[in-house]
Length: 248
Image (cartoon, rainbow, N blue to C red; front, side, top):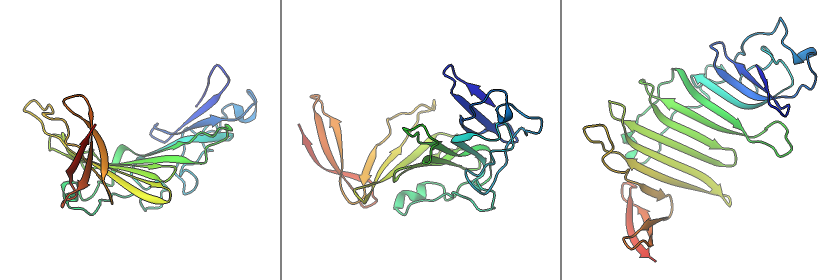
């Protein structure tokens, strides 16, 4: 499917056999109503999986050529290239509170979005060569228990969630890793939620932050309206224990 904006910029959308969007991008054909610029009777209606490129064919449905891929979407499982091996798997970390969360994800996430790739636009207007990636993993009830995002420039974010049997989020853990000046740094935010009988959160999340290998600095407002810098350090269980407070 093609669409054109008032400035003549053409974009395409391609679908899988179930009619779900899998590819979007720029259509670069300049001709009108000739050759590949119009649908042909032999064109298919959807694309299939393949083991190369973005793991989808691009030449089965219209447009069959002159395309630049900007976004890619994956569904149903984590074997994106169809080689019977998952391209992404569930994982935990190795500290005590890992036992709060699920040990594994459900591999057969039928009907669910499992992966997304988004191209980073180039100033020259050419096709993206660098993509940001994200993955979503679920339990047997279809609840998202891990989201994993990969920044295109040496950074990752992982968010784990633990649920009540009614579907309320009880615990979450955000783990951000980045590389600064050739040094890898990991920052963690652990949150716990409580609810009343009406399924409404009783308290704001308990925000526990840690920085592996050093203190995490945060600002907390005081009664007088000033900010208080708190240096927080990992405790025995790697929860945060406030040790100093310098207000100003």
